[in-house]
Image 1 (tube, helix red, strand yellow):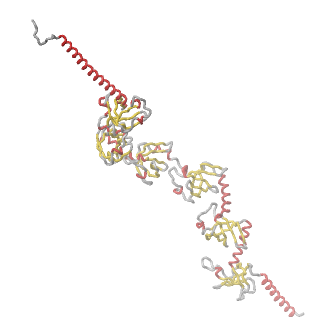
Image 2: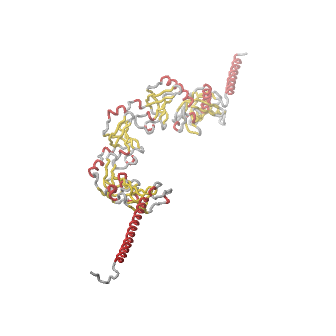
Image 3: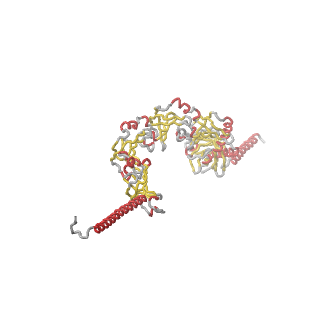
Length: 582
């Protein structure tokens, strides 16, 4: 064989080898696979890629345009592509960079799920039951797996980048479920162990306000939460923890109690400074005039903050000399700055009594000079009650005429039947109690006490007549005069025994009786119907006897005169007409 023939055979073998290699390569690239290729050129619509096939592949330029709008690929660059379709109508291979990236990501996520590795992504939106997360592909983050505690406002997480644990993965269904909570729990457990080792009662720790309730704040100390109760937040008044804190605030607090077994920690913020009540005696004294802010109102008064943590109570009775304050809101509002006088300090019980009215002069102190006891005044009725009548003395000052000072009578009188509002009446000043702010007046004192002259007006034995005003089981009350009453005991109603007094006497019935006893100092008069009847009966008998005695004397005289006349006639001369002989 000649050299020429040998060379021809070698060339044929080389061509055959190339064809075989091309055939094998063509057979090795399949649709649905990821292969590497080299970018040949970039046009305005496509990126041409050489994947070692007899035909080039192309990828839409859109798949290479980044968020900034720029093309992120250049000629000569090696990239991974997905074989989407062999030799389309144009004889080109249809490739996809996006699909290659996604398949690669799915593989990476698959490996991460198997190994328990974390994946990173950005929360992109809110869906039913949770959030969507972009981890290269779309994944689902359930609401219960967002944080350690349930979250009401999931929207606040949108746009945030976090690391997640893959808790469910199904490539065929394209289903990926993530958890951020699992990661946080693990981190928290590790941090908790370190915190428990260093925490102890009395130590000062740093924390972050994690949750706010009506009764306090929960502070994250690092894997473990401590409770900062509202009463331990400030020496001053705190109506709600939200006045002092917001979620996320960094705080420095003291550990008050620590229960390692139950992992409970009680915290205090006010304990970071001295108790202001420990220096109250040094700063404040009784009768001192002070200024403070109204921080709270109750039914019985207003609390005034003098310094942080030191409050005093102004009772409603100490707010005004003249006004009848039923509720502190009539005088002050929360936030008002007021002046007051310290009335009492009780450091041990952390109490201070204040008075607002003491800042002004007491108008009651001048009343005694203007209205001495015994003075008679005229005033208008302002109010009428069942226990007395209030009359106006001066602006804001009323005087009381008690029901017992309306009349000397022991019979109760109803003021509502005696007076009308606006009526002008006359009364006598009885007493003025400045301390208790009481002005006492009397009407009955305008004239003398009739009981002082009772023995002269109604001495024992006097017969009276009056209506029965009240009937009791033991006797009947009889009105003797407008202000004097007497009692007829049941035993003094009749000579015979009275089993039921109401069958013998009734109210409004007119009775005549005799005064049988007097006790002026006790305002008592004893009356008797029985003795009146007895005395009247005795008087009748005496009168009858007197008359009888008178009648008997007349008859005897006549008889004596008659007898004497007969005797004289017998002793006279027979011839009486004849003259006597001498």
